[in-house]
Amino acid sequence: MMPGNRVCIITTVHGAFDDRIFHKEGKTLKKKYNVTLIAPHNGNATVDGIKIVALPKATNRFLRMVVLGTISFLFAMREKADVYHFHDPELLIIGLLLKIFTGKKIIYDVHEDYTAAIHDKYWLPKVARNSVARAFGAAENLCAKFFFDGIIAATPEIARKFPAEKTLAIRNMPVYDMIFKTRPLNIKKEKPVMIYAGGLSEFRGIKEIIMAVGLLEGSVDLWLLGPWETEEFRIECEALNGWQYASYHGVKSLNEVYGYMKAADMGVHCTYLLQRYQKALPVKYFEYLACGIPAILSVSAYWEELFHNCALFADPRSPEDIAVNIIKLIQNTGLREHLVANGRKLIEGEYNWETEGKTLLGAYEKLLMAFN
Image (cartoon, rainbow, N blue to C red; front, side, top):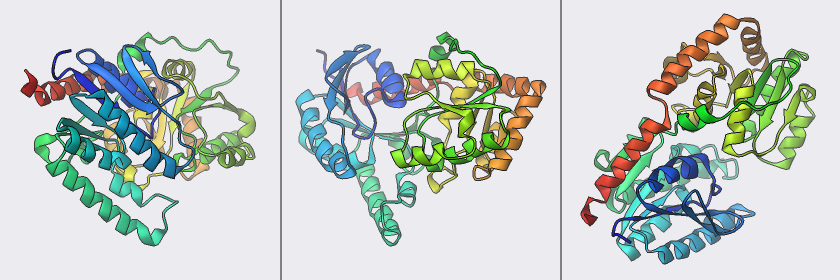
């Protein structure tokens, strides 16, 4: 095996087939490197040429942050990789230890503004959140500046937090070629269908979306796909007026999700605008565009500036406002076609993984020039 050819990707938070980690970064890196992925899974496997080293699935936060972190470090040391590419904030110490014990290249992949995210952690006492955020931010900056060799940020705004000379923004865009090749699901529809596919949790506005459908009294059906945050939240949603027009389709593979999206008539992404989402790039919205369906987004000055001519915008905490925008899409064929056409230009021109993947490979090539 040639020096510089071995890449080890590590996550304890995300599953082995996570969209960004496996389907985008992993498959792109596999074109030039031998890739091992250490991630929660039900057994060791090799899928699409990527070697998966399975971690047990954590049943609570302590096991994930402490026990899985320790196991992932031991597994990573065994791989003797040339690059260790880790994804989760709780693995910060693991990245540091790998640098100290191996001396190899370390890449920190930052999915969101974690210091801002700490302020939204309900399981942390409110009085402690500021202190925890400051302590984590200091540790993150120290490691990024002095120990890590590369920082990959999911948005340009996140990238600005880190040293410019070693940081790249690689946005979490859809793989356009994969979506283009996916056929719409062959499913019978009796009325227009709105879809949401992703994590089903309170801050993603799922209750408000269901209530909005309820207000329309059967004018539209709702498809929900993805994992429920908790069983209690699922029960809350099933008790809402509007659930009678909803159908839950479970957790699906990425290709299956795109098949459902292409069969739907519109998408919705009305997440609450928590601090960490103020300038996020909504990958779900880009997937709707790539699948050729119009979408409703949360009202946000940042999103309205970016997507003013290819989306409708609603207050994510107002079922009434969401319902008004659903009606606009149902009743106005020209509006739907206008939004879809403008969205397609965005996806084909800039917002696609094919463009981001080239940047990722270029970053690796530059990082590993020392081995050549």
